[in-house]
Length: 494
Image (cartoon, rainbow, N blue to C red):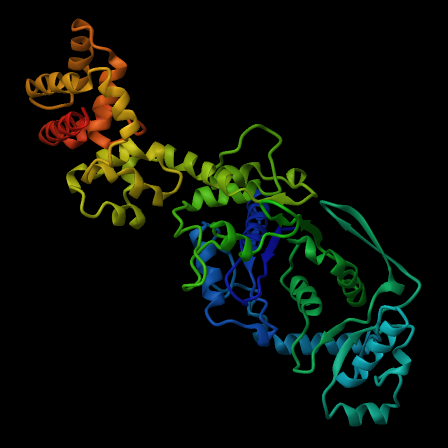
């Protein structure tokens, strides 16, 4: 049987990275098994629907390189791929369950249910609408056929009929065998009063009809797994494989990673910008490859020391055995380090294609763009880091006066004046290192003082990329001018 895996988000806002990771693991499992990756939009809760969410989900997957084989935008043989367009399918299947005696109509109003919950709380009990009390409520099990037909003209829901006294056994590929006493389960609502199905019902029907072989989703759905198994049994359908992924945890403390954590600590938790309210990884300067690579490491490892993977390598190396059961703690610094590895491995010409890079290079001589990127890409952790790395192209930063005082005591002004003479004798600065180092040795000039003095003159501080490449990019005239300005500053401090 062909492997078919679906990613089924709800369009209720931007796609959190927890959702992207679920999509990624689903995608990787499908590709590893030469299967099909399906996007299905679960939009049955119209009250929570947010305009633009579906487009955002599609764009996020495409940016990350996870193109669905089937879905709302490209169709397929098992559509529609929006649950809101499958109402007739759900009505047909709900009637089948009712006919089988596995589900029933319930006509209870909100006030009656609220009163029942309140009474249970007073007694210290948990309210469940099920085998123990269903005959006390207003439903098709407790009413005559005539009363049922009359009440069907008004509002109603359809509930699953859970038989008491059974142990429900389900196997999860990550967590092993899971068992649940049916006496502890509600008769879950399957069809709401607005005629739309609940998640429990719609996802089981759709997964069966779309021939999904493996369901991969977050561990928050584990408590619902026995209900889903009961639904498969009620239809006499074979259940798919189940895999419930661990949570992505806060960087510190307890609990699931949230937007609030990102806002507080200054990191993104969404793949793309969501209006003006949330910045995405893409706009924060992450490569899609770096973002996906880091997400794969949140809850999975290959069993080796390797951490840097392309998407193709992840497709080849991914395995269920590598998925951990415990939560995976989010680490933004590690995410940037992974992104840095991908950036550093790229050719400068490829880095140059990104709009974020071109924007930061505005105002810089275009003939020097590629040379700058070649020099600086190994210092970039995100694409947005370029701006702070090229400040010296316009003007050196304010001189570090603490360093200046130390260099003054070691004859820095005289050394820089002598360096100017060496530079003046060169046609260009591509051979500056080959000229300067032997000259310093011959004239018994301290190489450390020489290099520090020159770096302070050119960029204002001691940290930075290769000094001789800086000189080459700045050019002879700019280099000489900056040395002269530095000498004047040094002399003003004597």
